[in-house]
Figure 1: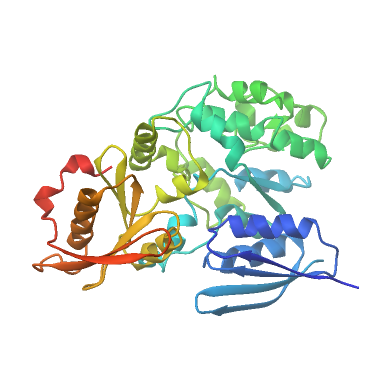
Figure 2: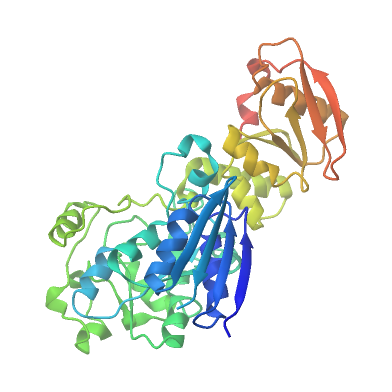
Length: 75
Length: 332
């Protein structure tokens, strides 16, 4: 049974949203999913890049009204 | 990037560590200011890691780093940049060294080059970093290794010293040539500039903050706000942070419950935070400054809203302050 988790990184500027994502994922298990809500456009590059180098998967990303949402599967 | 690539090409498993001190230039202001929308918004360390296919660990050292900024044993550089203490801190037992031990790595490598920076990358100061950090002979500088004594990684044969380099001095052309030979065509700016503490204007704002508070301390929000807006101090204990454009307006909105703030309602213009104590005369002055930087700067009167931290608002009509009545000395 995999878990569904979320963090709110709105109003944080990069690299803080990445650090929050990184630190939360350290506590999760492979297969868990983490929803990350951001407002810094820098996350559009940084969070997918961080996931790529660590082998995690961004399974959804969307931007609505300057808010950016990522859904990450922990691998 | 180059140092990591050189060692990775020798078949060594390399992972990156990037320390976030709060003073890092990249990302922040670009992300805030609308006028910078066209600029690439990316963390350069992450971009490099992505290019090299290398894991990168970003470590928040904001709290621990305060002692480096406030009490640098080896002093400051040209501004408030404690470069030598900074390098020692990052390589030392509490940071990279501890990470190395926890994660079972054998040595630390950095991209330092002898003679490249006036304070932290001199032939006499680079051994100080190795010694005072505790990393000692586990610290390898692949780009400048041939100018320095052999380290453990070379002696143990983990890396081949013959394939390391002897770069020195401020000239980046040899590194650029090496980058080209390794197929690296894009890299971040090669001559420093990644730390706000090396910036004269920023350092002046930080020094002003300490002087106004009567103590050398800071919190994360303080150092963020120093990166944003015009900072105007009409008197000790009373400073205005005036946004310069829509992106900064939006960012400063996040502080409306922390600072009394003003904004024009009859015209478009800047959100302005009031830092410190302010009486009615101060608020009149603040409103006139807001009016001066609004689109009503040439109008006879501008209506300005004063918003308290609890959300209560009131409006006043003021004449914009002429530029001649804003002395240069007020601009921090």
